[in-house]
Image 1: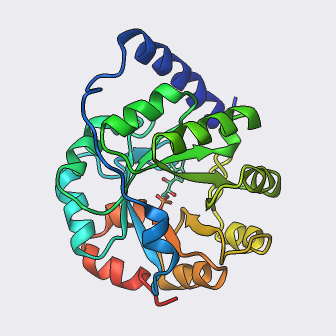
Image 2: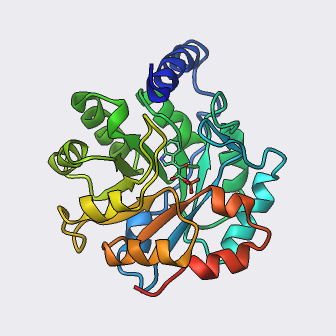
Length: 256
Ligand SMILES: O=P(O)(O)OC[C@@H](O)[C@@H](O)c1c[nH]c2ccccc12
């Protein structure tokens, strides 16, 4: 069984619990901020800085992090958006992290989770997400379509994540306007920036907002994303391990 299959199985249990208990805090309402508008015409590479305590591929990364302080520091250092891993079973995150961060930062916030049901979209929305992630590899097309439109209806932006040509084709058929190319294969954990370079050729990046995800460490990596037409990069581990977030951000925030 691949790790993705394992995670999705765990999510099925989480969804049944959520449905049974109901989504808490339904009364909260946040107006959402568009990541698309903020990124599409920007003159520099936008960094989506991620709060990532641990991961199945790397184990513990920075479990004692104070997510609110970390997010504030990201924004101070120039992050265009914050990604919060809210999965607890595999990434040691919590929905509360997202909620708490929403109280203190003004940039768009991405709820990074394995969404397989609309109830998770409700929960993300009620906790202050502006953008949700949908992973093409995790869902059949009809389900992707259903969740995509449900998120739109909830006025959320959708980052549709793909890793190969078949998934990219599906994203294009759905008319996704923000596409994330994950350089990491969620089945093998193998990471290569080349994935973005190869798949980006099949996209009109003037019309579709391209985000390159995973594996960014050096300025050279960021340069390759810019050359492929990406307007943003999603960076987790490198920032979580950084001893000087400002310096790391400066290194990655290249002009476009
Ligand atoms: O830590 P990295 O290599 O910078 O990667 C960040 C981000 O792209 C990665 O966390 C990610 C991309 N897609 C995902 C889907 C689920 C969980 C995590 C992810």
